[in-house]
Length: 154
Image (cartoon, rainbow, N blue to C red; front, top):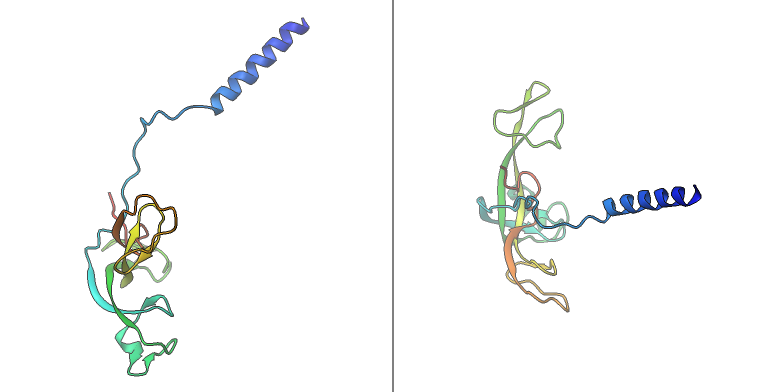
């Protein structure tokens, strides 16, 4: 009887472990590409100190009113989105409502950069790769790529 109990215990443990050790055979769905399409790219002012786009109203001859530094010209990815007053962190589509309120039109600006697909280093015109970076393949993207509204939808 003891041997039968041990055998059943061992079989149960083996089946349990076999479930955890499943092998992925690559037949699943591939993740969607949600990277930014850079459709709204335009030149604008970028403040490296604030790490944000500098609005014309915030900049004079002295520099940026927020930090005092002079912004530089950069290529920005500009996306229009709608945000409700009740939940300003939400991104709505045009005409969509939240809590019965239409969203206000807003602009999201991000710096366009080149990014290494292997080591993830970024730069304005070229990426300074980390030691040991093998591919050195770069793609043009924006710093908010993949985050609404800087992502591709369905």
